[in-house]
Each structure stands twice: as structure tokens, then as C-alpha cells.
Image (cartoon, rainbow, N blue to C red):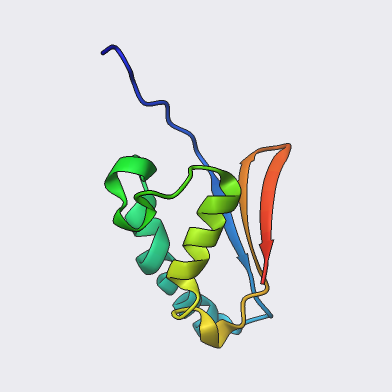
Length: 95
């Protein structure tokens, strides 16, 4: 008893080849729908179904995010995913 959750904010990025205006909007909508809306303001280890049982390291989170995003983002040819926790801590998954 007495345990409490501690929150953290992350910056998540996806690198893709240049997109025109319409494609960029569609891309952002896909990322928001498939990932961000499912994570925002939630306890990742308790309230996000696709992260249950996933180790809560930055690298493991990126791999789980890629599993979730690989099919929906296929047409945009993503090159890397990254999570930034603070100004010094960035973890990258090259695709």
C-alpha cells in the first residue's frame, strides 16, 4: 500500500520521406488514431491493452509501437521511430 504511479511525458517521432500537404495530414491522422489517442494520459502498463506484458523500457515501447503502426504506416515508408524522454535521452528504432 502507499504505492503511487509516477507519470512521464514523451515526445514520439516518426521519420518518413517528404509528404505533400494532403498526405502529411493523412499520415498525422493515422498516427494519432492508431497510437497517440490510445496512449495519451493513460498508465501505459495498466490501461493500454497492446502494452500489457511489455517491459516499460524505451526500446521495448518502440518495438511495441512499431508492431501497432507497421501496417497502417506502410504506404508512407517510415524510416525510423524515436522516443525522447528529456533533452538527453532519445531512443531510436531504425526500420
